[in-house]
Amino acid sequence: MKLTDYLAEKKLTQEQFARLVQKTQGFVSHYLTGRCELSAKTTLVWSAVTDYLVTPHELSPHLYPNPDDGLPKHLRA
Figure 1 (cartoon, one colour):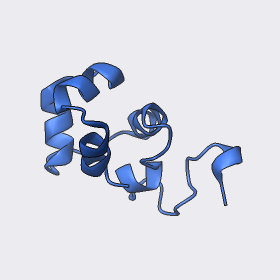
Figure 2 (figure 1 turned 45 degrees about the vertical axis):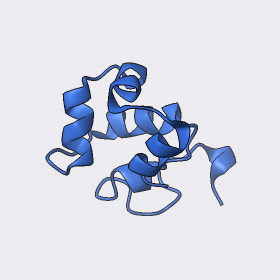
Figure 3 (figure 1 turned 120 degrees about the vertical axis):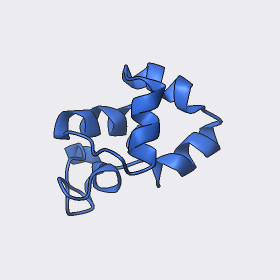
């Protein structure tokens, strides 16, 4: 699931999500509009905050090229 879809489904604003991941709303906005990429550590944190509904692969395919990359062992196919 894309992060934008997750936010819509959970009825979360960028500001609310930013607080959950300890970033600014501006940083979340820059990511969502493609103006910045996430680090490996930030990718894993954001994915965990979504309970892995948004996978590391979906957040940062350049760092996690395979769909199961970055997922905890119990969630891998």
